[in-house]
Every structure is written in C-alpha cells, then in structure tokens.
Length: 74
Image (tube, rainbow, N blue to C red; front, side):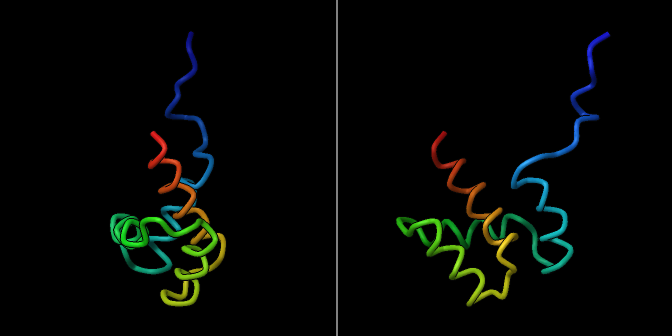
C-alpha cells in the first residue's frame, strides 16, 4: 500500500505560511505581491525591507522571500 502524501508533514518555507497569516492578519497573496513589487532586489534586501517596513520577524520574512525566489526560477 502506497503512503498517503497528504499525511507528510509540510516542510520548507511553506510550513511558515499559516503562522504568517495568523500573526500578521494578511493572506499570503498580500506578502507575495509585496515581494513581487521589489523585483530585481536581492534576497537579503527584501528580507530587511519586510522586517523594517512591515515588522515581520526574520524567519517569516525569509520564508516568504525564499518561496518567491524559488517560484521565480521555475
């Protein structure tokens, strides 16, 4: 019998998304749009911007940017 992939724990940046939405009261689409508006900026620059301008914690900001940068490569 094959393992059910839906029972696998969520890993990587996506695992932060429920906490980000709960903590900051905004949908992930909001954060993705903000990152998209910084097109051409480096990962660390966007993380710093999210932390300074939008008061996100480092882990949350990093997870959002990592997810967006990975999606841009596909």
